[in-house]
Image (cartoon, rainbow over all chains, first blue to last red; front, side):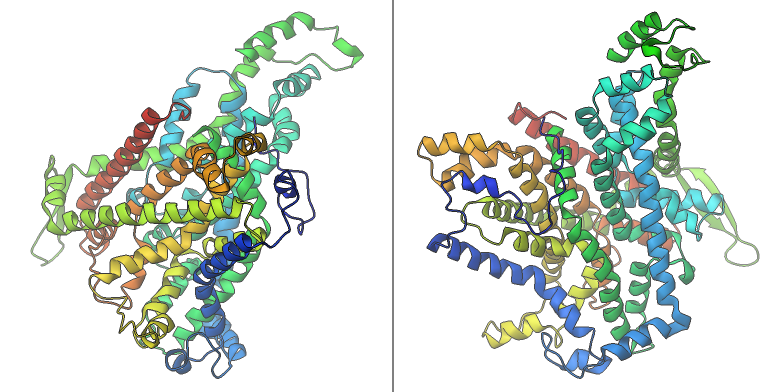
Length: 307
Length: 331
């Protein structure tokens, strides 16, 4: 099975798969007419994907009036510093609180989700037991249930136990990842040899200890993928916090920026803060994402092999 | 099966006071076999508890309350009383006969029929080009195309709302100076496709990466064989690569179908810059409005149930369809 075994750590600058093209008689590095044309087309496509981010970068240096009255793709009166200090001091510095909340929801939520999914996927992969397939299919059909259809009844239930408008109301739903269980099961099936588990048993290790010290380690590339998936899913989940939270102090940064975007009529400078805040909140994510890209690829290869 | 067999052989070779291999370990106190039988449930339990609480119970609850209706009596004078009564399918009838629900469903389906194929064809072409021998700077392009996925949907929608705003939009400005006339991205007809553009912009790179990962998993020897047979790069892409990445495309299609039916944040955020998006623009917005503006949670639950059902039918239907087509795919 080609199940991911992500190629051993490779210097980040090296080409993804150089061998691939060398087989074709070393034409790889030659710039013939075909590759110049292809590259030109790809650059045009790049403009589409990059220019909104570029606009964000430029616009975060503009004030509320120049934002509307200057060329969108070039600098006007440069006041990035003023925007930043305004952004972090507005409304008692609530923006930093939103950033921290986001880290809490997405970071802690994704870690817990990964651990739960890893244990469940491991059990489904490496044990035979009654109801295994039924449980797996029930979990898997959870992937197909739209999150927004869940959020509404979840809100009603949470309000019955007075959990709405608390950290828990966003955090608890975030730690369940059916897709994570699916990925963990596939990866565990393909990568953990049953003999290793048996060897652990012969040595007298408990089942949990085998899982913790051997299996989790083997599954670690899949765990990174599951973590990334869930991290993004929580980051991107707008509906759940929108429904659950009314206290601004509990907002994740996305909901906070949305609320500013909707009330800038009252304070025109807010629009600059929305733009600058969007940039500030996106930068760490973009860096983390792009540097962890190979985990996306490896995990996704595993995920699509059996679907 | 393997586990069972192994466990019996193990207890055979493990008499209490004679550990094998000379390792000095106490014999397990509990019977290993029963412990092992319980272990998988132990691993599953934490997940299942939360799965039950977050998925199964809310679904059950939504179905339950969708069959009831709540009436407020008391004419707003003095303490008003709410009475809840069994209502059969009346919420569903109300949802389905509501013209804005119908229009919302129609809108979302029309959106999906156009946007999902456009995005996935775009993503597939990009993946194939990046995987072809003619591509250079693959790493840079891959990163560039993937970048939008790192931007949360809400922020992407806010971002594009500026790029669509008449008078501010540099895109409209450039189109105008190129004599394309005045383009209004927020008009009553164009707005849906402006939303489609945001979704396409965000997810094309992600889908491309899934498909690209599928391409990378194809054994090199297949290409060599095809080349020996005199196939051109284009033919290899069409005849060898495309059939081999079927499962990746299926995965991305199912994700896209689910995402499309849930459409909510992009239209909700664009509502700040245009009046052409009503509070019932998509079924999800309608459910949200019903629950939080009109306080009709029973109707909202019915809409949520219909939405989940529709998603289920469409994604399962799609999986069945492709399963019948190609034997290699099994879910």
